[in-house]
Image (spheres, rainbow, N blue to C red):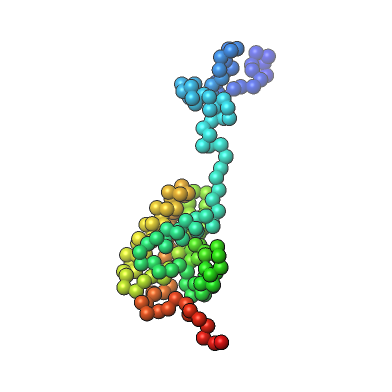
Length: 172
């Protein structure tokens, strides 16, 4: 290496050191004083400093609440999950909004499986479509994740004359 060649080459897009007393700017931030100030304080746009992770349970709660808001959805979950849910609902603070909802959350996308019970007389196809639309809108709006699929399983139909749960035990 010759003595006239610089030892450390600076990348082409990096700014050179300013004269003493002038503020430092990097890249395009020099054109925007506010961007230069953000850059000086911490290294760029504050929205890009760090990462956000969203737990599966958070997405499950959002989806469960959104699905229950749809007219024609009688309950969430099926069979044994609903039976245990009735008991859990009697305990103060025990109501589970995630019953009947399973989410798989990635970095930018999520997939959901919902199990619902519909009221007798409603169009199952219309209820499923409305649930899917409501869940996708709520999840994407609140989390920023793309809901790539929302699978809906209708596990039961609530008949008008069916009791939800026995009011008193049969045996005494």
